[in-house]
Length: 166
Image (cartoon, rainbow, N blue to C red; front, side, top):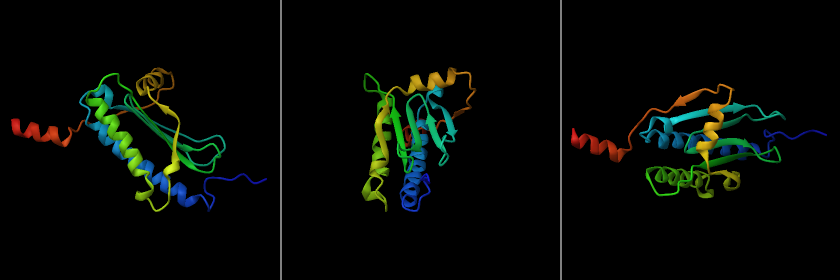
């Protein structure tokens, strides 16, 4: 029996649209992280792994406040996007970032914004809500995953305030 792969001609347009959405969300996530002034919260771990059954490589962005992954769904035919965000007990500057991240995910994958309907590509069965714990566990493991620091770039409003002061 021939095993289906995610390159099947029926799933190719769907997977191509999911991958494009993932990279658009990834760019947006990095832009959001860049607005955080704390250096330790701009550190990220980027993982890429080849699945056991072959097919598309899994990719993950892990930060102390955001999580994003491109993976295969349970049937192994379709790509899916997993995400997570740090939950905070009180409203603060970081809750604005996580809220923008969630809105961006749903906006980018919305049926109205894509030629192919990819609204069901979001894997919500296991949304990560403690990104800092995940980040710390991976960082402290003995696997020596490379840590990248996203350069600080103040939000547009903050840049205007800084210019007015100078």
